[in-house]
Amino acid sequence: MINFKELASTYKTPLYIYDLNYMTKQYEELKEAFKGRKSLMAYAIKSNSNLSIIKHFADLGSGADCVSIGEVRRAFLAGIPSYKIIFSGVGKSDDEIREAIQKDILYINVESEAELGRVELIAKELGATCRISIRVNPNIDPLTHPYISTGLHDNKFGVEIDTAKRMYIRANNSEHLDPVGIHFHIGSQLTELKPIYESAEIVADMVRSLQNIKIELKFFDIGGGLGVKYKDEVTIKPYDYAQAILGTLKGLDLTVVCEPGRFLTANAGYFLTKVLYEKQNGAKRFVVVDGGMNDLLRPSLYKAYHKIEAISQSRTDESKADVVGPVCESGDFFAKDCLLPILEHNDLLVVHSAGAYGFGMGSNYNTRGRSAEVALKDGVARLIRRREEFEDLVALEKEFLVK
Ligand SMILES: *Cc1c(COP(=O)(O)O)cnc(C)c1O
Image (cartoon, rainbow, N blue to C red):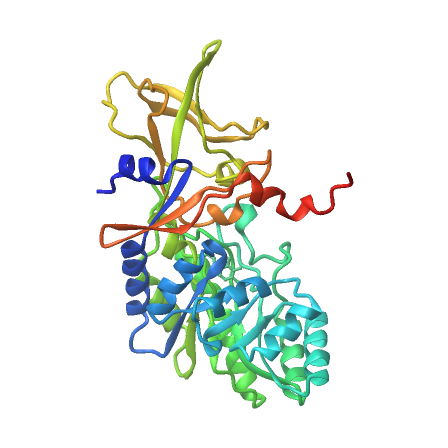
């Protein structure tokens, strides 16, 4: 049991808390599911990009999937070796591509023909050969929230199969490109195996057809997207996931690359916030807390559900309340109609499943400093990011203030 009261008194609120032992357990379970095959787990840094979290996965042997050069730099800082770093994303700038090539990472996941052209040109300028993989959009409905669906032609991600084939031929004929992998990532918070399996089949067939024209790939990058339980979702078991993927790879000698984010971090994280006030507007009950949408955006952005629990309150006399933050937006809420006991000033609420896409989506809106982050390992707490102070927020503006 995590002692939230003690953590709140030591580190204050709002506060992010991450259970590293839980992350280890998730990592090992997924890695284990792919045993018997060459595989690389490349932690999707965007789900939780705190350096100490990345370092934790680096120590477990993980690589990194990055979606900006900033994330690539974080991966290096945290000790992930270059040969385990992947750079994905639909809009890489020339500077980002150049730095990724100079850093000699494992490969760049290319998302369009135009991008392939830029990568080739920049590699040529550097006198280098860049390892690439192409992100294929298999046009399969992932059956998840439309905002986090990425594998349909309506989405901006990846390229169609026919385009991909043309790109592989071009890359294979280029002195400056080395096509080593193929990639798909059809969405996030996936709870259905069928779309994943169908996508893997399409992509594996593509690998076979490339073999027929003497283009031999080494990496089969299945992206991330494994869903987790926020409420009552029935999730995909890592073993079943791996079996489904491996079943499509018969006769192919490829290293499976997996890019898990949420699966590793979501349920390892808690967002701890303090009750400021109870208030009643007509029939509607509100619990106003000290954390806001600038700390945890998912409820506002996706109407995402997060379980909320009152700490050390008797569970009697519960009634429905909206849990809202101090930010000046009606969209600033953590839960609607959540059953909670009557609360008092300074009571604590724990928002569960906050380890993925929590802190990282935070902002300074309303000139609110971002929360501190704490990691728990074997029951011991350690600060891994200090709370932002007012001085941090104005530091980049003060020197430009005209007197
Ligand atoms: C976001 C992302 C991931 C991780 O997604 P999760 O749903 O957190 O597992 C993996 N790969 C790519 C390319 C991504 O954009």
